[in-house]
Amino acid sequence: MIDNLIKKHNEIFEKTHNYVFFSPGRINLIGEHIDYNGGLVFPLAINLGTYGVVSLRKDKKVKIYSEGFSKKPYIIDLDNFTKEGPFYTNYIKGMIFYIKEKFSNSQGFNIYIYGNIPAGAGLSSSASLELLIGVVLRALNNLEISNKDLALLGMRVENEYINLNSGIMDQFIIALGKKNHAMLLNTRTLEYKYAPFDLGENVLVVGFTNKKRTLADSKYNERFNECKEALEILKKETKINDLVDLKIEELEKYKDKLTNKLYRRVKHVITEQERTKKVFETLMKNDIKKLGKLLVEGHRSLQYDYEVSGLELDTLVNEFVKYGALGARQTGAGFGGSMIAIVPKKELKEIIKKVSKSYKEIIGYEADFFDVFASDGAKML
Ligand code: GLA
Image (tube, rainbow, N blue to C red; front, side, top):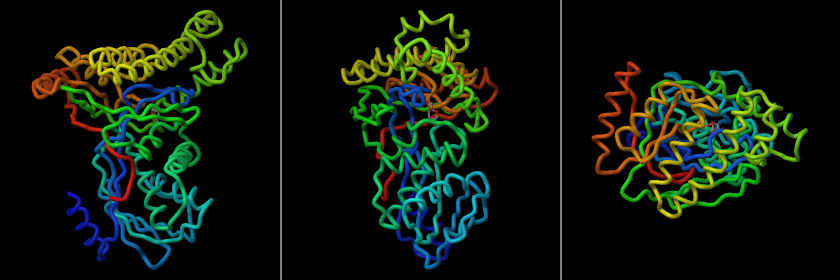
């Protein structure tokens, strides 16, 4: 496949390529919607992602071509930077803009971009693109910037350039993912450790609902603001920095200070934090059965307390569990997008066949399924 991408680059830009880069997508095993609440998250970088085939230019222009976005190349002039442009260019321009603040990044280049994460699938195609551009800029300009700092810049692009209050999870795992490992990340301190990701006789399947959405037009910011509001109320009652600092018993004590909606949002955050710790332990002990159960519990919490799943995701989760998955849950922000399931290798084909059929009957259109495995973070190939 890479040869084919190189060929395309060379044809489109009428130039021989110099480098190839790959930036993964991500799934989150558990720890959902708590990275903006100071929580622990447990994601892994996946084998699906974004490729960038690059050649150097003599001028100070960045010429972008991606069939997924537009049939016409888009040119960014590094000397005459403007913020305006089609939506997808925000991810690219945002990275260029924030890196420019700290370093001189004047090397012009052509880039042929190819992504195999379906858009709107909730597998972080946007963070994947941000980090792709981050590692390209670093390599071409010899910048001294760590993966962690590139991840933080990616988050700034979301928060300040695009105005989405997302947390650090996606960019962090995409920058620092490790083959065959998941990462337990403390989103408050940014301390992290890797856990070998081995499901034994089982495989990890991603089910994409084909209900597409962008986070910008979802209720993501609404949830962020609800958590902020709850935190302000609870801070008057007890000494906490983030919602994850609260114990569930304390929440019960302060229940009448919150509306029922805010109470349920906080309940999700607190219980999700506990589940994430348990999922980490069960993976380390290879207790995949217990891990599966925790994933389903996590999904129910997103479904009923945090209210971010929806009929399509709930249907996929329910059908996977019904037909023999050890566990299943939404992954990422929700509101459509994708879910994950842990399925016995031997029954994989059979289970997917049954889930596919039921999903189509209930929802009216097909879901897509991918086998995924844990990959390295963004890098030059
Ligand atoms: C999106 C955001 C992340 C995180 C997840 C939900 O992927 O980009 O920061 O909040 O949703 O866990």
